Amino acid sequence: MSAHTIRLLMPQWQGGNNISYHFGAQLLAWLAPVSDDETIEVPISTDPTNDKKEDGIVAKNQIIQQTLSALTILQNRNPERVVVLGGDCSVELAPFAYLAEKYQDDLAILWIDAHPDIKTAELYSHYHAMILATLLGEGDTDLASLVSSKVDPSRLVFAGINDEKEKSPYVYKKFNFPNVSSEEFSSSSEKVLAALRATGASRIAIHFDLDVLDMHEFRSQGIARPDRYEEYARKGLKRSSMQSVTRLIQDVNNEFDVVGLGITEHLPWDALSLSKMLHNLPLLKKQKL
Image 1 (cartoon, rainbow, N blue to C red):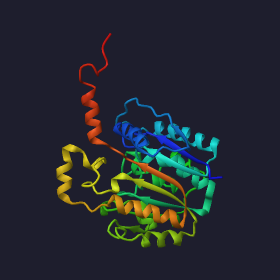
Image 2 (image 1 turned 60 degrees about the vertical axis):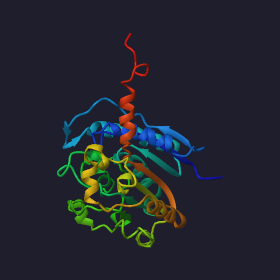
Image 3 (image 1 turned 135 degrees about the horizontal axis):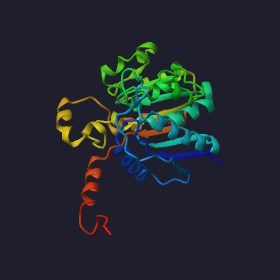
Image 4 (image 1 turned 60 degrees about the horizontal axis):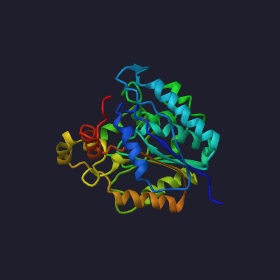
């Protein structure tokens, strides 16, 4: 009998205060292969938010309440493995906290992302850039209290971080995390595999932020916003190919027990624009009574 897997659809957008992530998560779930695994959607408010901060964090209370809803779902069903379809990066708090509690020292995290998401409220107000700090027990104490078993920094491996400025936050400097660049794993997964072996864990939770992908190949990400696409395209930011990330995740799965896979920050700009257009066409738009 196969291990019990839950597929969690969590279209949370408050972590980046960008409601387009709600639509992006729904479309991501539609694109994902059909599965016999139970799929559960975490209730997410679509009430508009703004830049009002609680303890320096935008929409902090909303994020806490939605995270608690996701934790309750996972604790009640007690799956061995969790797939998360997000939403911004903040969706990883509940599933990764759940897996850290379940597997303790036998769980390592592979964070495949252009950014380490390890800031604190003193540096940034949007929670999607703080999620990993919370899992380590750093930053806001209310959010950190949701993580009953903190992740040991020695069991964290980064892949794809490409902005040197992102390496400056206090938490990153404090722990000096290993990072395998997109160039380094472009043709071989060995450096990532070696770093994961060094953690001593046999189970891996993988965070895959779509912004690690080369924007020339994959445009459904935040940096590829139409009004600034050409500007960023000219900068030639070094990011990963879809092929290299696919191979990397497959290679990790071949050697370790992958118990978590979170895919986040899907921003399908063309689909969003078309949806807006369709809502303004006759015979399609909602008619006034």
